[in-house]
Length: 622
Image (cartoon, rainbow, N blue to C red; front, side):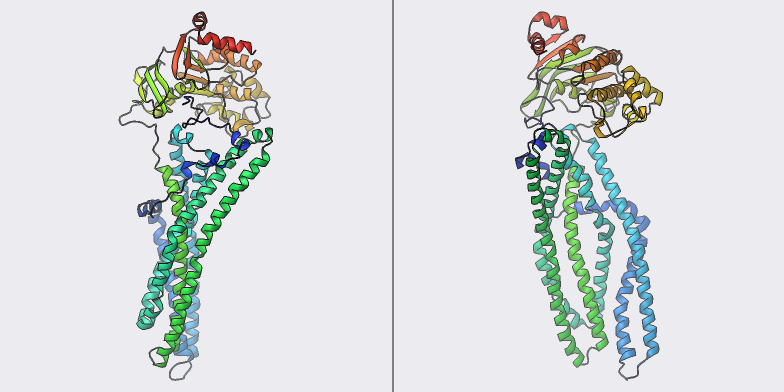
């Protein structure tokens, strides 16, 4: 297996950022294990966990929402009864004496009830939306914060687009549930209970006869539930794959166009898009099946209502007004039943998303502070590797018994062929991965015994592919130490020879740069990363191919900056360009995870071994 962390743990090379776009001709390339359908029974514990996010706001707003809900429900249930009174007592009373006064009074009462119902609905919707949006805010915040804490191995196995879908799409799909669904569920349940009680009080025989169709409806609809849930999970999975592919395609657009693979990329995206549409159509069709079930059941109930109702009127057991009221209540009975069916579908969609969200929230960081871990005090920079073995995958060692002894202030160069273990070593120093066996100490402290944050605060890393954030030049340099003053930022830039090109930019240090610093040259981005590292003032500095993509003129500037940057610090330098490490205190030559040679430049040249061969090979290509 490769021991370079730039390769995937399964041993296959990690793709170039644009390779996916350029070579997207096989669907297997985008089948991610973490996007598999989560096929479990409905988890009520997870359901309770999801709604646990509403607890902080329940005391503040829920009582008011409940009052509005009860007002709206009571006024709605009162209207049919008043209608029956208007028919039986005012319009067609038994004595034949029409009462316009009573009719006007009942009409005015109904108008007032509708007004109360409207006002209560307005305030109920307002406060439920507030609660829902706060819940979504908390959930999204928790997920993002948790992802920030996860270890490298988590991101090694997942594309950025897949992670993005969890934070955006999956959480967005919960908005309707929290803003409308929960309260509507309570309203419909209260309304159903109220209607059942009223129907039985009006005429228990007719009430039972009408409701005999309810078990039929629930039996049929239950058969669809599991299929609907799995179908919506499949929709989320397909959308996640599309987002992952889009992310890689956009990042790799230059490679795509350079190799004229636009047509292949479009064809592949069309296949994924079509697959997503079919998945949505299937899930949506299952959702729509609830409607006809309710309509057929409601129609059967209405048929029973009028057949038995007519008989009861003829027997003198029911009045026309009560039959009208009964009909209205039955109509209102099927509406919440229908909404509850749709609510269940909505809940299934939400549970499919929440399962994916909680899957990430339940992911434990591989690298975390052990119980009793103490902060690492200010260090000098002595580093020791003692028989260190590391495996990205069990049984396939990337490092094999590494022993390194570095004194504070020394500069150590790591050289070797691709996959020899150079980047693995520097990742272990910052404890981005945990070693399989052995021990790594800094100033005598085992790095597993100290807090991760206190360790990394004293380590600075400059990578070959420097990441520039959206924002100003000043903000990007200050990322190394957020409390640095403007003067300190400028001093760091001057020290690494970045001040000159910054001053020439339109806004100087306040120039806005785009994501990844696309408006800056490679050399300029590297100079900014050096300034960022210098401002952080780490005791240990790691340079991972930091000068590999820089022109000769910029390299000379950086070599001068390095004298300032490396002074008094322990440094590890990974370099393929061997001319940049001649003055290192110690050069370690790695091959397949083992140290083959070590010494300074002169000593290794005199040995005429692997290092000398690497030097000669480079000069042959100059």
